[in-house]
Image (cartoon, rainbow, N blue to C red; front, side, top):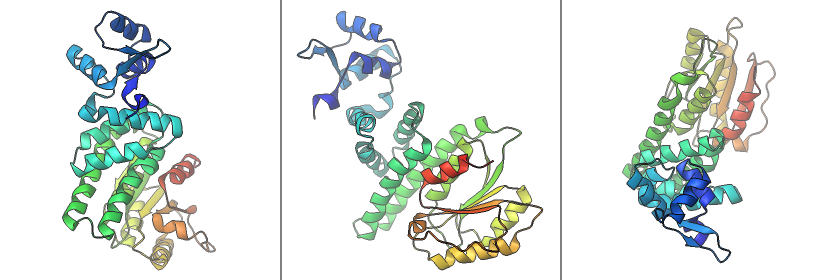
Length: 302
């Protein structure tokens, strides 16, 4: 592992401890915080030493939640800031997910959000690649059904944990309502949970219906809750005909006195860019194959 991956500057250490850089320099000069020097005379602090220092003083440190994995997390944060790559953080997250260490994943995502990385970008750059990795292992026969269910449930816990952390604080009397769920026959829930979290983070009130929702129930719940948006998640195992059936039935049940936008999302959408919207009653019908474009579209709505 290179110096960049293991060592911190005094400025970086101060940022992780949430203190002024002068305090870190004082601790180094006084021998309280072990450090060494570069050829240019600049102090460098080993990640493990910073962790031990923070633990001894019972002081908060951004890397504390990651325990022995802190050096690898630091490596990933440096890579993300310098090369805009989530690759190292994906590796760490995969390892945690296999052990159901969900608190570390939540801590990482929370830190990234504090550092002004968008939630949508974190989902597309970090969480989606992690789940594609496990999905690929399962398809190739390198992962059992039980193991695949285990990591999926662990990721579900992460998304629900993040949702519970922010749900009530962002709601107001002006909050709009969205109905979110998975299409009939759909047994993969993570995409819908991500959409719910994006909406809640943007201040929406969500009516979450979960897995395997009959299309007519989306329409009924939209009317019941006066929702201005309906989001349906569907995965590649479904065909384009399933998407067309959803649109057709939702359009047939649409009532002009209860207008709404319809958003359908899933990786399957990457293969289809054209849809004949002639004669459709929705205020808007849009398709998404990732979270970032959905979030951008959402921000552009009234």
